[in-house]
Image 1: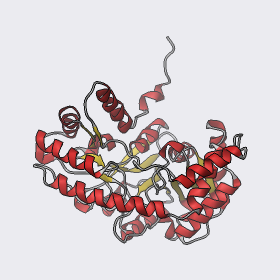
Image 2: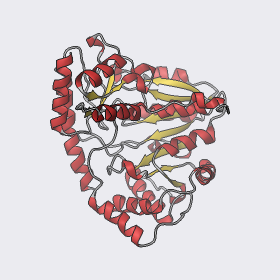
Image 3: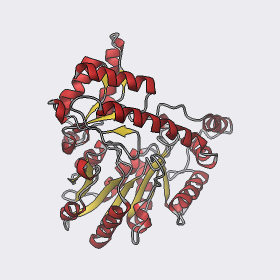
Length: 386
């Protein structure tokens, strides 16, 4: 029997999809499950975006496109990024991808060789560590501490940098913690990157998802960062377009050609009619984003208050995204034990903190992308089993 390549053993997974599959199987068996595991807005894609895709199909946008993306799409993204970032972003630096993950894949593929070190947030999106391992790199976890609002200790972070550090990943607002990197910390991270000549992958997919009067600050605003930073962004979260698979990266000049070549080799191009829908998303009124965040704010407050009323649970208030990351050590259960008990005992699907790295032990992630009615019911179901 043919043997798999040894590197396949280094490839991880995304536990949210595994948990979703288990939850769906329980539902098929007749069990009631409240889904708090999957990280996607439960809102419909706005009608005007859907209409733009339908029109694009009727207009013949059904063929191959440029590997880097349609020029009109890249220009629309460049205008959007220019407005949001406060400096001129060229359409030449934009590559449109089928979802945000290829931006991670291709950046790590293009940069990381065996023995290169990559600093990444932990707890953090699991695909970071998975791809670092797959490419033979050495993952170096940047621990996010509850005591510092689920952010890294800057002095400890500085100590992680070595001559082999090739790439650093930052994610703000953060998945799974819902935390936001303070601007002062972000500036210090930028200084480290410049001083040590490190490329930065800035995962900004949740840039529209802040609570209160906070505004997004990109690490690219600091001196020396635009020429060494990849901005990962997309449409999945802001416009409830997870199934459309439409993302993009804003790349420094030295990565544009190699990443475009990776696009050609991997997927040829991103679906062209969905790119037309993306233009409509960016260039139409942004009311739907505001409406969604108003509802997420109400859900966040309900979930935080409810979790803090449960015995043994402490839940800080998320500052961004749509996740809560409560400390469950007071229950006497491990993260996985808590997740299993929630699923099989209470019919509440959520994720063990260890799905997001070793420093997630003692926590669970709850996505509050569900109705307030279901969120309240989930809290009461958890109360019964605790």
